Length: 94
Image (tube, rainbow, N blue to C red; front, side, top):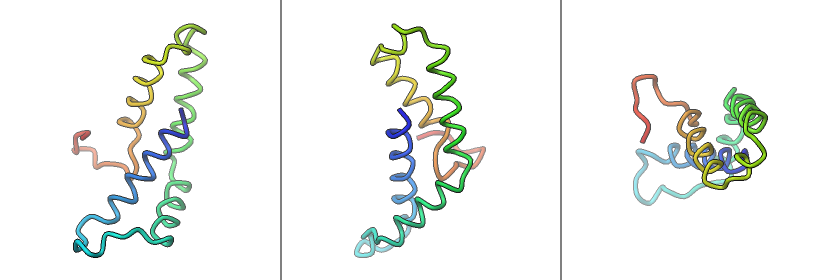
């Protein structure tokens, strides 16, 4: 679960770093990717997500945690709840 959420957040960060650039400037450099990953690692988002995943798996029964639809719903919920870069408080989820 965590890998999917973290990859999604890093990709969001990369795409957001490209916003406002001219069409020809939309290439992702190694520096951009490294900067986004470093910013993500230094944020509190990772630990918050891991805490929520642990809580989810501890509270879910064996059958509930194994249910793919239930796990997918939780992944989507966590991606929306803990976006990176964080949205302003008044911004709605996409």
